[in-house]
Image (cartoon, rainbow, N blue to C red; front, side, top):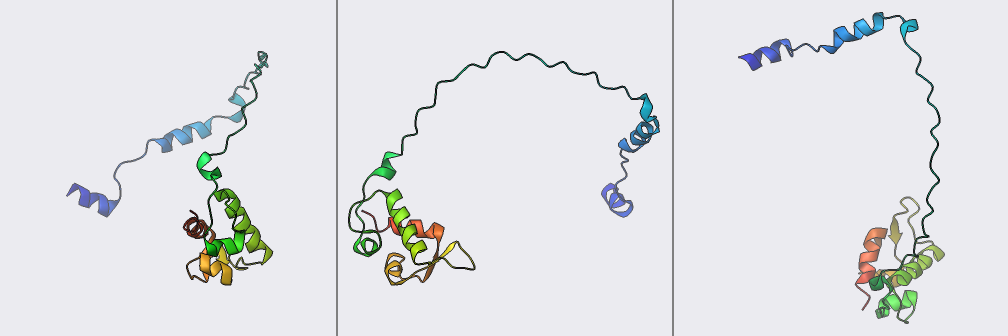
Length: 137
């Protein structure tokens, strides 16, 4: 019965914040105190850190992989790391303007790329890297 009454008449609990707002608005603005000016704290001399070591590439990405015959038609037959294979495929895509003009995330495959993409005419750029990895040994 109690929950039914709440549904019929709305929430019976009143928020106590409403009267407090009226009381705060009633005070004149001139009665507020100005914040005291903070003195600038003297900071200790900064400790110089040693320069960070240069980042080492992940060895798994840098391992030379042999492309399949279909992928070799696009990037060449020489063994290359995965990163270089992806760069060369993107260079090929940009050189031939194979990105979909309406949705730049989609790649329109030509005859060479269609063999790499498993016969698909269009793939997303995220799916492309997965399909390329299938052609690396």
